[in-house]
Amino acid sequence: MPKSTPDPIVPDRRNFVSGAAAMAAALLGSATAKAQTPQRTRPAPPVPKAFETIKHVAAGVLDIGYVEMGPASGSAVLLFHGWPYDIHSFVEVAPVLAAQGYRVIIPHLRGYGSMTFRSDATPRNAQQAALAADGIALMDALKIEKAIVAGFDWGARTADIMAVLWPQRCKALVSVSGYLIGSQAGNVAPLPPKQELQWWYQFYFATERGKAGYAANTHAFNRLIWELASPQWAFDDATYARSAASFANPDHVAIVIHNYRWRLGLAQGERQYDAVEATLATAPPVTIPAITMEGDANGAPHPDPSRYRAKFTGPYEHRTISGGIGHNLPQEAPLAFAKAIIDVGRGAG
Image 1 (cartoon, rainbow, N blue to C red):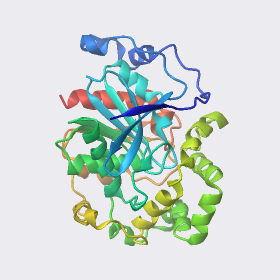
Image 2: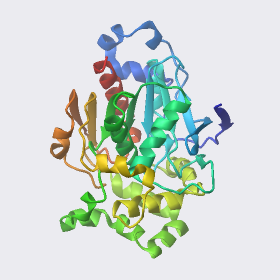
Image 3: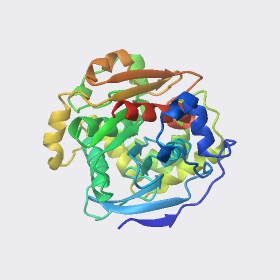
């Protein structure tokens, strides 16, 4: 059964509005509000400065720590964060969605926050198929039959994979940077020098020096990634510290290193995922309703939207968010991200 534990509150950088309902009203406008059902027009509690309560549930090989907001009877939305971020990337997105009647679930990924492996014998595996399987295991544990899936970075890849492998479980998709499903074979081909330069940390992690360096300097290393990936985002120390607390997970370093080494074929995955990875290597299309997004100042490696357009064969829209928005789009442009989820959900029926 899910259980709840307190999570320390750290002051947030933003001056929050009085409540999520006000944010939702500003986001949706009066014309959209008229179309809402009574369930989705009720007031919501004020936007939290941090997520105060973390629930836990046994799901597959993990005990997953997650945040839940909104009515239990609402349409489910799963929000997946990336590296090196955590659940607080959605701290302003979740209340907006909850105010509209959605049941919002935000899990810690493997190696983050209060997530733990249920057995010491379980491989600390971070290949893409394993992360997506965690998403389905969480849905099963929470008895969620179908959900909108959304995310960025590792979380976008996880949502993409869930959408293509389990379309019957995914109502719709919102993916920052679009189609991020890859393969070890596909990663063999070299990129132009400027693109290779953007992946410097991947090559660093491929070395034992890099593994030791990341373990010794996790806090400073990940702050540097935040700065490089979102060069125009003026986040403060408290905002970073709130998410950086999740990097203290005892499996964090092992998970991060395995993820990037697996991509380059330098680390093995688990054989149980071989067939799934073979399917993903064919780059199957996303057939469910989808919205892809990109910030206009994303400093992290990301594909041009034209490169992945053909991978979305269902109802589809791409949105570029202006205003100096970087890689952590949900936290830098929470209203735009929430609106994409609401819009794609309505389009899915």
